[in-house]
Length: 488
Image: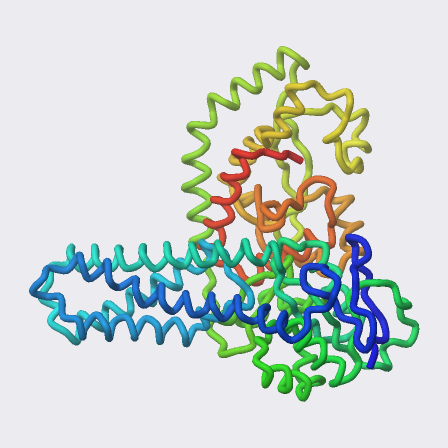
């Protein structure tokens, strides 16, 4: 059997196997992986899964050292460790086909450790310990577990950057091709598509036979690609695919594959409940096909975080803003604050504030010119402000007023909102949430003159999977980027 079509790679031609089946070789190497390479590809995630079990089980040992010797009952701590392992397994904390971020799972891991300790204290002699000792033990247990998991996930991320996890994309041909192409554009996500599973009838009017990701149109092709590449991850494009290709998905699950659902064209936009294992992959909302859990809304918590942080940052930022404004006034004259209409939540306009780094020739240019980042007329100081994002600091006042949030989709001008809403499905859905100074798209390098399609997808993935902890993680990653500024 031969693959009947391919998805073009945006990074250039990929070498493919010649002969019976055209499938991508992991890592882009020629020569064919063969059965041994397939086993090697499977060994790494399974080894990581075993190490995670070991890390979570061993994390109770330093916590036990905090407890006074008379209360160190080995059986109690053994049962506590088993209980935490069981809770983590039930929540799919050992499914390593898609590796979470280091900070993303801290709340879930710590919450389950706290539940385990609560049960242990209620049912064992530990209840006679002082509260301060118990809190210290829980804190040490959480710290050990999170540190161990961070080390495992960090190693796994490094491995995946060198050798991405092979995956099959299952769904309608056009949508599956879009997903495969997006994953190829973002190799740092750690997942590389090695085949698109679609119906042969969909290939009419296809793209020819250029090198890329093969389209697999039969069960024989699919199984061969799965075994040749050691596939353990299957990306199911759209909820309808679960019904239409139920037989194929059951077959892939029987081969030990982990199934994830994503939808690039019609995401949930917050209308369906979030599931355990939810996250994002290259900006797509990603959900493990397993038990559902309720989604918590936290608009009050988000607003509280915005007010506290923006108010706290405005005070130390005021002298720096004043200094930058004085330099701009000396170099370029009055009018150092730039005001412009942007579109915010639910399509409502507001006036955004920035330090002026460019003087447009007309109002039309200000409203329609896409980027001035490389303008030759801009002074070196203005380039410095843009490169370090210091020109964005006045937006802290927008956040404090409630026009914006610290984290959210970046606001755009009305002209481009109308233009992009027609060109990109789901662009208007970005306005379901208050816009932000930084966001999921920005920490993934989507700033300035970058793909609007990718940016839109990341923004909607952020909204669909929103949590207060995700905001904290994005803010921390943004702070790190200030140390290595790239500007916009």
